[in-house]
Image: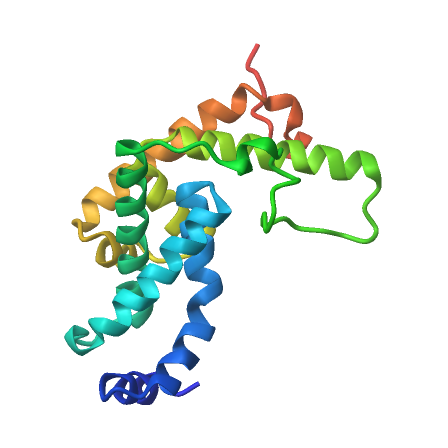
Length: 199
């Protein structure tokens, strides 16, 4: 994929070039939105809004990491949607599903996995998601972008529009809170990840 050429073409109004960019980034954009919002439908809506917004404003893109620029739009779309939902809470059919039954819920599957291992993995995944959702929004987003999506600190600073030091301090606080939260469900953690109690 010749990203600079596709961006240049999209800036000239080439919808096909922009669609190639969308196809390349849609999975990552959705994953960020899903982990921020915890709702598959809300994440899909926020991702769609972000891609529409990015297309409308692509002429304002001034270079640098296109992925960072796009993920900033995605996170802003998620924040807008979460604020809207707080103002007008709605009940959702998604609440009827458990985490592993939710439609389009991202999960890892293995054909060699036995039912007990599958159940343990799903419980662990649910515990991690619960701990992640318990974080304040500003800490959750840096954790998702760093530890799940693998962005570098300077990319995260670009995405969320804060100083590099702020990213590092938020990430440090979020990791400490996640560690403490997961200690509450330590029995779900594989033995190699459990903190050893000091006697």
